[in-house]
Length: 89
Image (cartoon, rainbow, N blue to C red):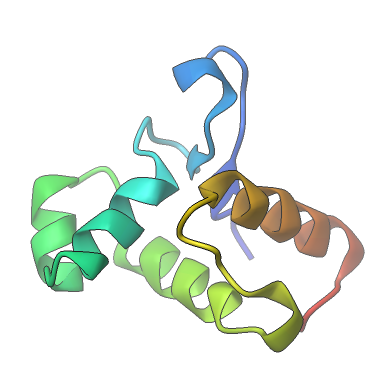
């Protein structure tokens, strides 16, 4: 499976972004919390793939891997850890 989230100190100071983009994952959760649909988000950020959004949302539903909207960095850290170690599947 393709990477969903990456962090690179050269991209937005290391903020977690959708892989292959400069779109922070926090933007997705901000849009959803504001009542926007996934389609609305994707229209505003065409570099993000629908599959990436769905994979991130699915990962955030894992019981031991819940997303805390106050700290998107924790989700990126745990998502990257799970990808490397096969946890939370």
